[in-house]
Image 1 (spheres, helix red, strand yellow):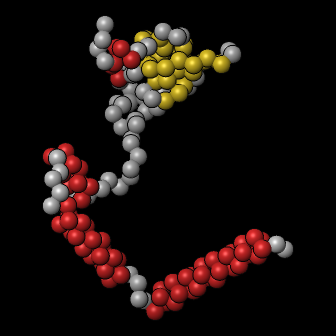
Image 2 (image 1 turned 90 degrees about the vertical axis):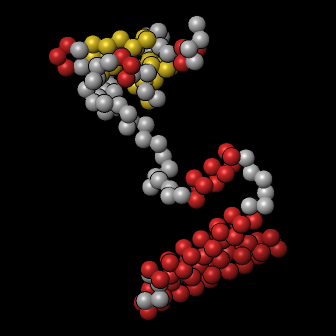
Image 3 (image 1 turned 180 degrees about the vertical axis):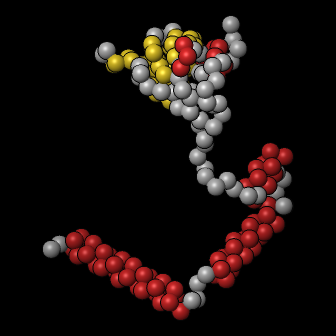
Length: 166
């Protein structure tokens, strides 16, 4: 075993021992009841004290209104999930063309994909949160069908059309 291998083995051993001690100490705290609401309140107060200290230090700095607004929003309540709900704005079963955005077309051999409302679909797949099924995919349009003979033709939306440029 060369010097480098010995160093790696020693480092791994130290990490394993530290991890084991951490687990054992955490288990002993749980059994003795030392953690819980009071521990999390102490942590929250520590974070709040740190935030207050940083805010006071920043008061001497000249911030733009946009920067102040960003700091105030960051200090406020945060959303439960950082991910965007991409299908939240789609109403199920409605047939207006404005609800569907056909923004991309891809073809791999005989397989065609359409990007509708930011998601990829093949012929025969159901559009998320609606009862519409992709019937036909063409480079310039997508035809969607739903129950009772409802049919919607959605034209390809180009970058210029999104910016309202002729």
